[in-house]
Amino acid sequence: MVEIKASVTINTTLDKIWSVISDINNEPEFWKGTKSIRNISQDGNTTKREITIAFKDKKCLQDVTLYPKEKVEAVFTKGIISGRKTVTIRETGNAYELEAIWDIKLSGMMGMFTGMIKKHIQSGTEQALTEIKREVEN
Image 1 (cartoon, rainbow, N blue to C red):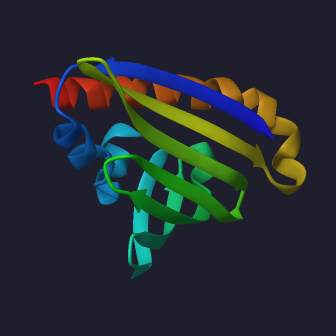
Image 2 (tube, rainbow, N blue to C red):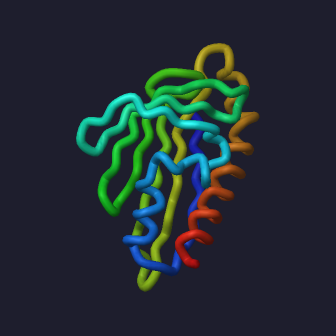
Image 3 (cartoon, rainbow, N blue to C red):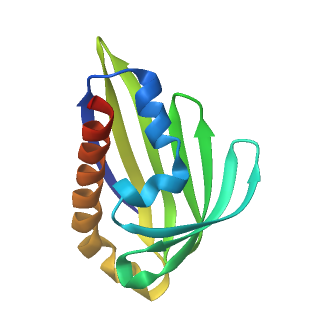
């Protein structure tokens, strides 16, 4: 497994940040590695969905759970990626820290490329957090 971490400090309200990160259908707008989303089912705060990722247009299944005004957790349940991505909001004085942590690996024969794509995921995550910051601070 490879762990990837990135965070950004945001000067706005918790509600503004939550409104963006909890809109999981809008994820491709900020997370460029996610090309498209197709929701399959929803049970309470958990959505089962299929995503198409930028890496060779591969499809993955995810269970995405919303923990209101705290975190969004996406567990990869089938496909080229296994593991999870967690986006957490933490209050830091008069601002908020938005942190993304990936704990993933590429499955099967693609496992040998996990280290190689780590830098792409790191860069994409930093870009996504910066875009979210820009969106909610305006």
